[in-house]
Length: 105
Image 1 (cartoon, one colour):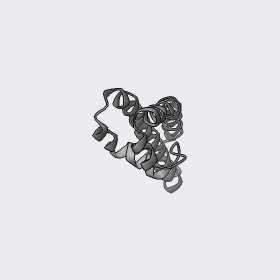
Image 2 (image 1 turned 120 degrees about the horizontal axis):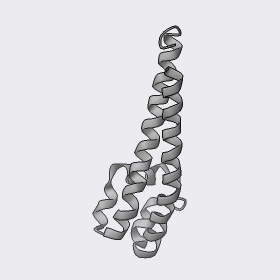
Image 3 (image 1 turned 180 degrees about the vertical axis):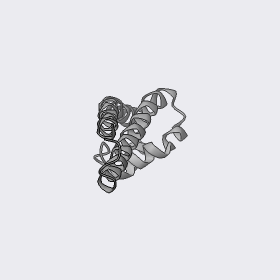
């Protein structure tokens, strides 16, 4: 049963990654076209830049007051949270399975 849930959490992270790959580049293109000053703040390669990802994860993108951008960035933020949560819970179950090998068979 532990393996099932661990695989389910990995699948959840993959689904989040799929949504992230769709919405985050669209958000960055909108940011580049409509808000060039904010785009320069995030760095050159903002797709996997930790500074840009933290900016997205913390929700500071809402300060732009652009409903179109928020409509793209919010699903990217949710998918990033899903990725992190899925990987965290899969790792937690892995540690549990290593520490208690006979439980949850």
